Structures are given as C-alpha cells and as structure tokens.
Amino acid sequence: MSGSSPTDSAEAFAEAVLAVVADIPEGCALSYGQVASIIGSKSARGVGRVMAQYGHAVPWWRVVRSGGLPPTGHEDRALEHYEAEGTPIVPMSGGRYRLGREALLY
Image 1: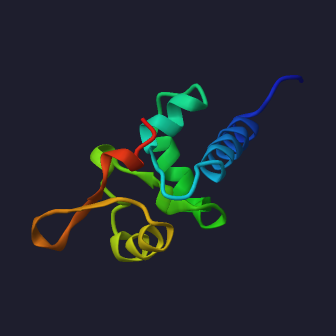
Image 2: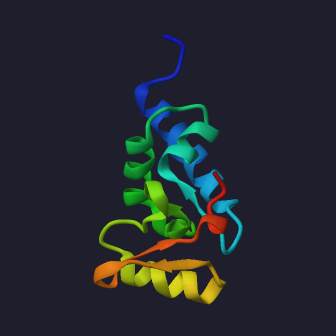
C-alpha cells in the first residue's frame, strides 16, 4: 500500500500552519483565513483547530479573527503580547479592541 494516510495529511497541514505562524513578524498579524490561503487551503477552521491544539508552540496571538479581532477567550493574554510588541490597537466599546489596520498583513 502506498500514498499518504489521513494522519500524514493532518500532520503536514499542522506543520505548515505552525511554520507560517512562526514567521509572522512581531507587531503584525494574519487572519485564520489568510494563514489557510498561504498554505493552499480554504480551511480557516482547520487553522483554528491546529492553533487550539498546538498554538502554544508559536506566537498564537499573531493569528486573529477577521477584522483584526483577537482569538476568542484569549483577549486579555493576547493584549499583553500586543502591548509588549508595540502592535497597533484600536479600542472598541465595552472594553473590547481590535488590531489596527497597519498591523494586519492582509
């Protein structure tokens, strides 16, 4: 039997996602969809799954939701990283924030 198994494909996808995220410069960000596009996929949700499982190994805060919104449930921790890196932040109502347009690489 030859070819790759689904596990091999999932591992290759995860490795590709993590490689892209590791290369995002300080003070910048990509959306989940943009990371997917860079690796030749349309699966932003797949990128999200990889980040949920393995994101601790890379600068996870540099992958944001559409519109520059920080990862759900990690807003406070992400803000600490953004401030340390000098990432442009735009305050929103209710104490929320998004990244400034100049931080987004897409």
